Amino acid sequence: MNEPRRSRRIPVLGCIGRTARLTWVEIAKLIAHKFFLFTILMTLAVTVLLGFVGKSFSEGRTNIRFSNYSLWVVTASFGLQIATILLVAQGAMAMSSEATSRTLNTILCRPIRRIEFAVAKALSLVFATLVIVGATGLAGFIVGGTVQDTPRSSRGMILEISGSRRPASEAGEPDEEHPEPPPRRAGFPTYGDVVDPDFPDLVISPKWEVLGNISFGFLLLVVPVLAAAAVGFFLGTLLDSSALATGLSVGIFLTLEATKFFAPFEEYLGRYAYNYPINRLFTLMREIGNGAEVDWKDALGGVEASAVYIVVFFLVSFIVFCRRDVTL
Image (cartoon, rainbow, N blue to C red; front, side, top):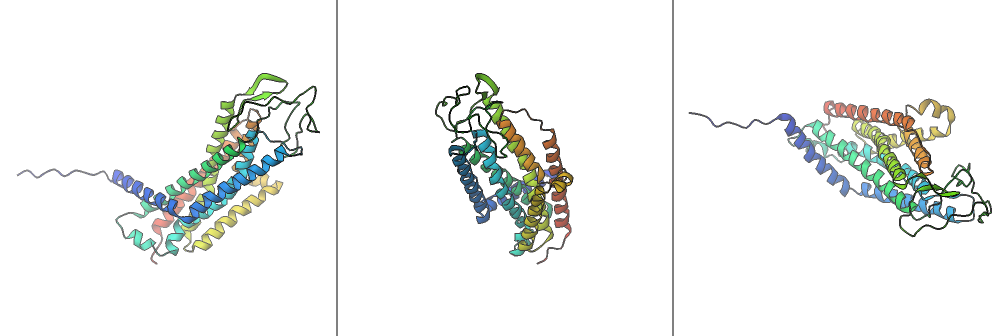
């Protein structure tokens, strides 16, 4: 008598399916969590507020002038600094909060593997990073679009935040030789080509090229920001106390941020620290907004170093979580 054939399941596909379902559950929990909502709202509030402060400088009686591209990048840079600190705390709480709330044993009693649960947690953190960086870039884009784009040239340069460039007329009045460009057609957001005011028909950088390059810069920013969150994830896996893991993670990040104010630290730590590529990328994006041709090579080197942090800290976190005693 022939026995009915039993369907053979591929173990790898079953593991992927369970991990995908767990990831969806973790993302749903993340979205419903008050701290994640607070992170998004705080990031948007800081980004928009600082953006309009920068716009008031641009429209006030000062020598500081912003184009819409530079305001977009500068505004997003401030907002992302706050967002990264909150994301580091989010990463630290991803695992440690389960231990603190005494729910980890209940979760692991289900027919799931530890590695599947850990990978799902990490993927939910990737989702959070993408959402936060995207929200910051979009908020900065909208605020930057409220400023009338002012063409730039070698003789009529806009004064940047560093104060190294001044407008053609210090008094703010139109110069007879270099008059102010005529207002562009109304629209929102008002982003256009980067042109020379002396030769309005000469396009230095087309609009879509500038927008594409800056958007590419925001995509690269996901890597160092996620690296910072991965360090927090590791400490949250290592420690049972959510408060201790969060404090250590944020403290390490703020310490590395403080080293940027000291040239020797910046010189020796810059190529190794996971947070340094963030400033490099924003500097390049500002230059792109001024119509300059930039070389991504240096920034990509920092992004690659941050990617190593992500791989190492997530892998070590998975190994630690799978091997440690989580009996509560």
